[in-house]
Image (cartoon, one colour):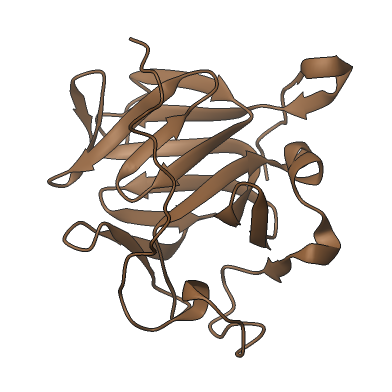
Length: 193
């Protein structure tokens, strides 16, 4: 919806769409900093890309901290999908979303607030859906097919108020806040400044 998908040739000549992660000091201002990547990971209050950029930002006290600066807004544009589950065995993927915004602790997709980061729990709470989660990935749309076998995952529309499938086992559709035993760890990822 207005955002053109930029493309570049990735590993083995595969065409990938690029996500742009931009940091804003004020809503009306232009981005203070930007990164381009095909995917990144959100684990609790950290955003990172272990392969290329390492730790990108951490959430603390109402803002995202990137390279020592506090940014109240992070924007992800370029068209992407939310992916839930462990990297080797994803369980749920969202419909394509044109833009994501992390405004303070709130995550919105195409302008609709869908989740809030609860700092005390170090988890995300769904605002439209009754779900809690620790980690997710945001992947560019073309990258999803390289990572996910569509027949093996639950397709998720972030704007549907009720889960598509009530009896899904595991923490994804659990109403209680709790931290999964195995969570994505970005602390071991190298950082680049």
